[in-house]
Image (tube, rainbow, N blue to C red):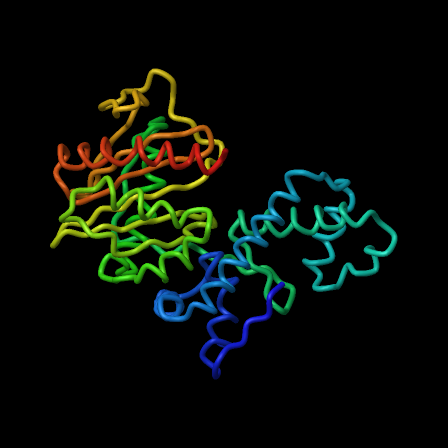
Length: 300
């Protein structure tokens, strides 16, 4: 792990918030402070990227190695009591211990529980969004499109990211080597009067998003990518239009925001804007084939 020096107490304070920032546990004001600092501090942005990578590796360890249920239950019991389960580590398979501890950690996050220093769990309710999508019962397509809509509202609107202006260096630092090339792809395909103002990775409800924000005057467009978590658009569902590659694109609208979504084998891709329906369809039809090709090349 690379050690990065930092200046003064501000970086130290911000870094103490990063784990809570990744888990969406901070107050709105503190989240604003973290985002503002990350925009101007490359070192802290790299630390966030490293912590995100470690969290992803830990999650993969959980999925790839199964610990005995008895061990998982014992660790969870000890955490709830506030005790340390370290006495178990020397006698058991290390990968089992890692998998069990990680399973407990991610299970707690998924349930909205954070273990404080007292060892007692505290329920953390997600902050309400300023705009909500009303989904009819059984509307599976709407539920999937809501994933992109919610991140657009959380990030672009509620945290004012649409009013930001990132430099190319800031976008590269936040997106990381896996996704930084997406900015050039979007710039090439979008109409020249749209400007990519933000490119970063953000988190909402313990889910990571790759988020590009484009602006033209008062018009704002979000291109959002997130890895699938078991979601699949229903077969035979109503595809509102077809993109150039022939893949179905689904759409809906809430609060004058147009939402278009498609899926690849591994990702959900969304285009959300305050454009007209036809305008958003045109942007989605322009961007999504190129994004699909980008993801294929990245996976190759």
